[in-house]
Image 1 (tube, rainbow, N blue to C red):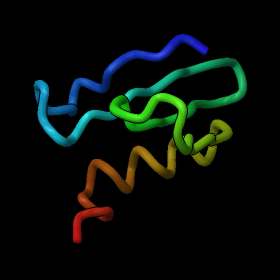
Image 2: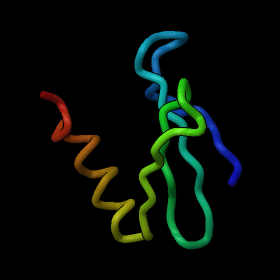
Image 3: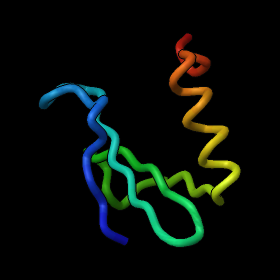
Image 4: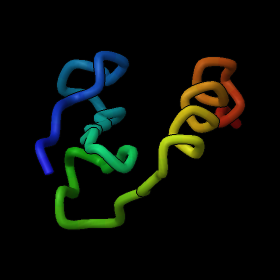
Amino acid sequence: MRWRKSSRSSAGGPDCVEIALDARGAAVRDSKNADGVRLKFGDAGWDTFLAAAKTGSFVS
């Protein structure tokens, strides 16, 4: 997979997210732990994840 840093990641800060897109959907990982857990989504799941992230649904 070809990973790229999200435009929403902070520069050098604690919030560093990378995404990789492919024909089946997308994956997300913490750029500080490239070998760690990855969230993988199909197309519909990726659309749902993006919508929730844009509305702040993951903020505690």
